[in-house]
Amino acid sequence: MKRIHYIAISAVIIVLDAITKWLVSARIALHDSVTVIPDFFSIVHVRNTGAAFGIGANAESHFVPLLLNSGAILVFLIVVAYALRTPLADRTLQIGLHLIVGGAIGNLVDRFRFGYVVDFLDVYVRDHHWPAFNVADSAICIGIALLFLDMKKKPEPVTA
Image 1 (tube, rainbow, N blue to C red):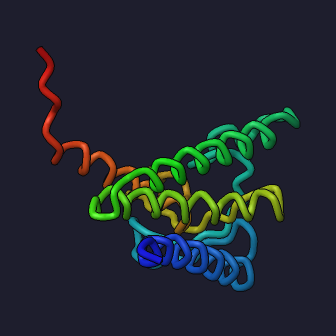
Image 2: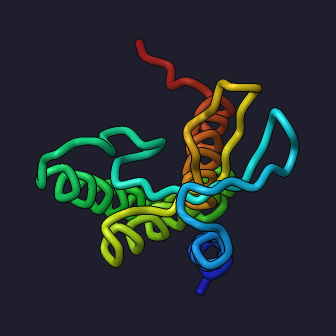
């Protein structure tokens, strides 16, 4: 029960990710775009069959989805094990780990259900676009940033 507020972070990410992907899929045609801030930000509807930011999306091999799913499950299990072994009082680390877990589950659910992940956040400057991403990807990136922040705030062990 002491972990419930951290588990709630993962659950909120999973639900928010699913709702936003559903809204984009239901309201924006595939490959269409809605400009929010000209020359900076749009909502798009793309399907990513690759890894984060579309890496490997154009691979023809049937092993790519298997490798992506297996890798994601392995990372998920490692992160969960680490979260369970980390003190609850280590808030920055726990929040970071649970953001990663929520994002990983959000994208894994889509990969297993559809064979792709819906990406819809498109950040760009004029014609230079960052690869489209989603809420789960954002949670994973923020979680990783929190892990690095946590590492920076802890003193280095002294070795003789």
